[in-house]
Length: 428
Ligand code: ACO
Image (tube, rainbow, N blue to C red; front, side, top):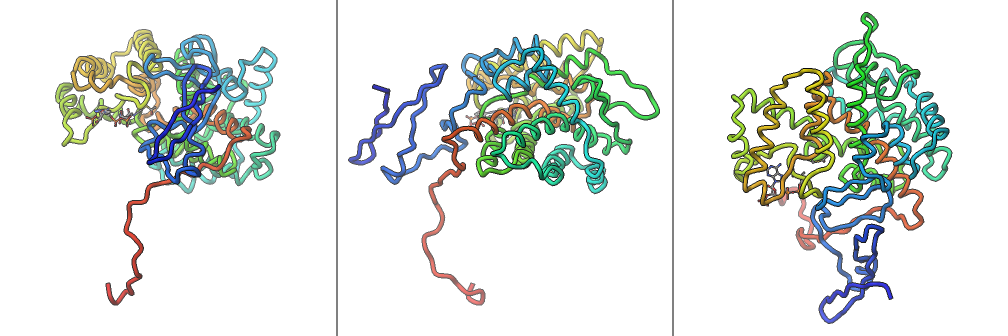
């Protein structure tokens, strides 16, 4: 007989099935709770709530394990390129050579933006945040591809997936060019995904630009380690929006908005701002650690802490090593990297951080690498979005293809006023 959990509510006893995942994680299925007891569960921030079963990514926060489709992140970051990992996430298996060539060719063939889309950029202020531009332009793709918006038509979904993966770097680099007042650089389909992105970011019509292979490989690694992270805030947003049968462009656009927040993907930008602030303030790391511990202050050490990882973030370990290697190779002496290392050391030895299991997360060192590559700080979260896109797509697709999927519609426990008589304006 399958396992059950017993719940006692007043004089009622309810048997709730326990669902066991492939890694032996267990979840209590409360599907019949409300219809049987009239009650709902309350779980602020969904700390204990599994919103779905999923076969995309496994993570174990206690042991610092992260696997995409069963493959450890360390092995993928070491051996793959981003497009290969995107294929793995979206289709569930690593591609063979032929599948990879076909996928790459298809992605390359969709990199250009419709010329009319370029006029959108004229309407944004020069200092618009690129994440705002990214979400708007991705949402606008649904106006240009009205022939492929049906989430239940596999062919339409397929072409939308390829278009999105192909166009996101172009959309992102145009946002950067707009902020500089420089002409947009068209994609070059003879180049790899990361090389092409760097070209579009940094080349101009008046000067030749060749991407540094060291940067191409660092970018590739960063995109891979950001590619998925199961039911995080932005992925859950994509699934939530998609559960209403909204098209893929609309769903991804809302995921980009969720990622923008400084408690989520926006943290990489906030980390560099914080490190700059510490540097400008004389580099007194202890002062900032003290501020972070002071509950009255409201200041947090950005890039520290994670809802799920409680020992270390395996992505941060990969990135820290890459950061060390990159700065050494380029012979860069970045004062922010020194402050970051000092801050990490002080915080990791401090009782407050140790007790709360607060460790550097994926965002702590990624900004230092982006800076070394010449990527401006406002673009950091945009790069996170490019990396996370295959994960969002994989989850959206998994949800659309699941026969048990329903519109996401949480409940609440109402705490407002009881029924009261309307009072006319002259009597208020
Ligand atoms: N600095 C100082 N104190 C912290 C920090 C921090 N960065 N993070 C958590 N804490 C403290 C909290 O004040 C709380 O203390 P208390 O128990 O005394 O009240 C305790 O640690 C638990 O923190 P919560 O906010 O309850 O943890 P939660 O799981 O809700 O939040 C989060 C996780 C949002 C990542 C949080 O650690 C944080 O704000 N970190 C800084 C922002 C950041 O780096 N975000 C990126 C996350 S990774 C990603 O999204 C890609």
